[in-house]
Structures are given as C-alpha cells and as structure tokens.
Image: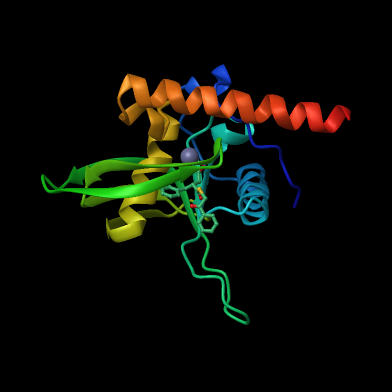
Length: 177
Ligand code: K1U
Ligand code: ZN
C-alpha cells in the first residue's frame, strides 16, 4: 500500500468526469488499497479516485468511529449508479479533503439506492440513509467533477475558494521561512 497526494481545489483535475471500469482486477484493488490508506491518513471518511489524480469511477469510505481496538469497516464502490433518490431532503454539514478545513451545510436527498461493484467485482446494491447517504452522494459527485461547494451560492463558493487560496499561500510562505 502507498500514500498518495490529495489534489486540492481549484485544481482543474477535480472537474474531470471519471471513466467507468470494465472489470475489478488486482490493479484496481491496489488502487483501492492506496486510496484507503490515504483516506485514513488524511484523516477522512471517504475518498474518490479522482482526488488522487486517477479519474476512474472508484470510491472508498469508512464511517466507523475511530475507537481503540475497533476494527476498520472499509467500503469499496466501483462504478456506482444512482437507482433511486428520496424526494425528502436533509441538510448536513460537509467537508472535503480537496477543500481542506472548510465546512458548509449542503442539502441532499435523505435516502438513496445505489448499485455498484465491490472490492471483488461482485454486483451489489445498497439503500443508504444518514451519513452513509450523505457521504456516498458527496463521493459520487466527485465522479462527475462536482465538489460540495458547487452546491452553494456563487458568493459562498467564491468566498471559500478565496480562503483556500489564501491559506495555501500562507502555508507556502511558512515552508520557505
Ligand atoms: O474529500 C472527501 O470526499 C472526504 C470527505 C467526505 C465527507 C465528509 C463529510 C460529509 C460528506 C462527505 C471527508 O472525509 S472530510 C473529513 C471528515 O469529514 C472527517 C475527518 C476526520 C474524522 C471524521 C470526519
Ligand atoms: Zn470530497
């Protein structure tokens, strides 16, 4: 397994639409292992392959609370497809490893049904609610080149991008000093 670098906004690579996979082989399992390690190290609860510069339709997630002695519960989604979304919406605060340290409330369907291939390439379906539904929709947005800030007003989005660029410049200055 290897740690990969996470791309941050406004990098144009985050706007790419990710390509579907024809099968889940060892190379893709290695990619998923690297993504999981990178997500745990960040730390985060989800990661799409495009966030490490690989525009393929692959997502890893782990919503398990980090408690001592508790095993990880990784989830792997290849070629996820939205089958159904509830009309009811819910507001939830979201963050993104590609928009570091900034959080905002986003409105999304409260429940979704999604088909996908798992780590072994087996076809699966999940009906998700709560944080699983929020995180899965957030990660599936990444596959379309959409960030959570794209769901906000233009004013809010531009303010967040300005903050991000300012923070990055400050960090770069600190590195030089
Ligand atoms: O960048 C990403 O797509 C991952 C993102 C997932 C997400 C979080 C919240 C709502 C929707 C989607 C993150 O993991 S941001 C970091 C985060 O939420 C977190 C970090 C440490 C512990 C617990 C949560
Ligand atoms: Zn994200």
